[in-house]
Image (cartoon, rainbow, N blue to C red; front, side):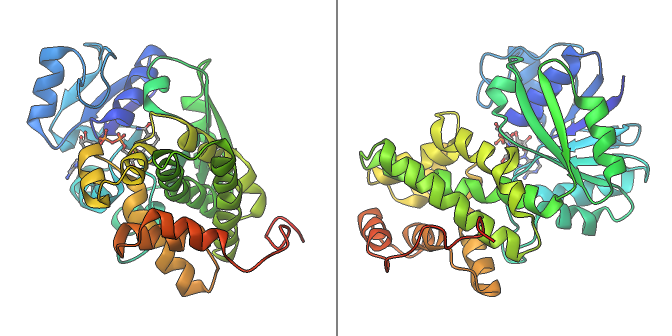
Length: 334
Ligand SMILES: NC(=O)c1ccc[n+]([C@@H]2O[C@H](COP(=O)([O-])OP(=O)(O)OC[C@H]3O[C@@H](n4cnc5c(N)ncnc54)[C@H](O)[C@@H]3O)[C@@H](O)[C@H]2O)c1
């Protein structure tokens, strides 16, 4: 059994804490906010972020960052825009042999870096593993069968995470395509926002299937240009995560999209829903695509809706009116 410290007392951090505690691991969860600790101690659950899931007394809750110092594995369950800040706080306490696992999905605003790149910069002495795949917190916490992928630059560490974190409810695969796994997990949130927008506008299954299929195509196109392997995008961290995010009401990206599709401003929708990783990621993905010269029409239109005042209706018309193409003009074909 391993000693885990999980950073972040939100939905995903707590769901992993519950799952790991159920399988006998020693789990501490850290929050930057004393109020989060107090609320869970009082209510026995995080009513706002993971309602209805009891947080066992065996799980230690703390605001003391030195709790990372005796952990074998430290898991970051922090929204991506705060990841660098929290990594800087953790750095002085981390032992170099501690394996760091990131679960946040997104790209850093401005630098356009993947989260493992951010962690490598802030924690240069620690091995970094990315855990990604179709894994709604609400279902992980209830022990519903879930599959994810551990990826790292050195397979030794993803093997280690796989061996320690796998159990009868949580099956961990490994993949040596760190870039592809991270980009699939991050960019699917852009398409989930669009899927929500189409739901909010009253469109149906045809539209969503089109978005998901053409969405994974453009995600893979960017991913391959940045060094990912095309087959990764057909796996759990690509199409797998895209399916779960575009079709579920657990997805905050999709829920924010629905509000936008019904006419709410993007800023208000994001404020109402909370952690909507696809919002910043849309802008970052659009900038990244421009930088490397990759065509991402859905991401481009989404960026215009979110940040340039374009109506969702016009964005959709623009996509439908694009020059006619062969479907197979994609990375899926050699
Ligand atoms: N919720 C899921 O089902 C799920 C699944 C897989 C991956 N993820 C990813 O995990 C990350 C976290 O998601 P979540 O659902 O747990 O988010 P959340 O909004 O439920 O919780 C985030 C937690 O991060 C911490 N936090 C927030 N702002 C902070 C700050 N300024 N400084 C320090 N700590 C801060 C808080 O403890 C907060 O509760 C996201 O990147 C998300 O994409 C979520």
